[in-house]
Image (cartoon, rainbow, N blue to C red; front, side, top):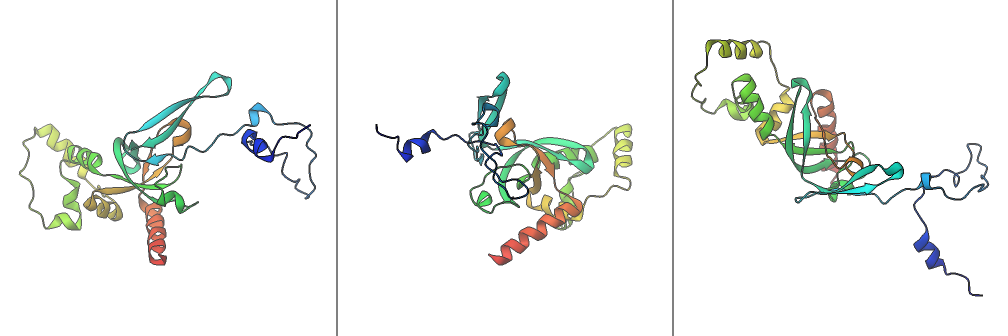
Amino acid sequence: EKLPSVESFRVNMGISRDSLHKRRRTGGKQPRWHKKRKYELGRQPSMTKLAPNADVRPVRVRGGNTKFRALRLDAGNFSWGSESVTRKTRLLDVSYNASNNDLVRTQTLVKNCVIQVDAAPFRAWYKRHYGEDIIYLTKKGKGMEPEAPVKRSASVAAKIAKRNENHKVDVNLLDQFATGRLYACVTSRPGQCGRCDGYILEGTELQFYVKKMQKKKSKA
């Protein structure tokens, strides 16, 4: 009787998330006391790409639930924490990934990667909320001619003046507004929920990642 070939086994092998194949903490091998189980299955990584024509596919999973597997994404909701505002914005570039440089090269979106997003929606909100364009606070904007004053009612003018009292924006963030791109961190899991959402980097966290990216550039 002819035995099945190695190739046929390779094709039928599934991705498993079990721990029976691992050694014990003491270093001893565990006996294989049960075969693979449905609840231990794994699937191929989605490797979501930053690309136009977003493509999100539903996947039927255990319990009749649905996961959303994003294959391509080009926009997401990002939160500006210090201003408590969230806006939908375009994704422009994958800039840094602590786990793997290839994910930056291939523009792959995963949780906790650092990306660049379009600053325009946040700039428009700032202008509406604080009554002036944030670009005038940057080094680039200080030499620009100011816009003509907008006619406002006394109550609105008072409200905007109160908002501007003791209000400051992080210097590093202002430099980014001048370029039109903001660094952001992804907090959602694109391969599981089909979305790319996160928050704008600011303060010490922004300094940390900017330093890391500069170091990487200098090595290259």
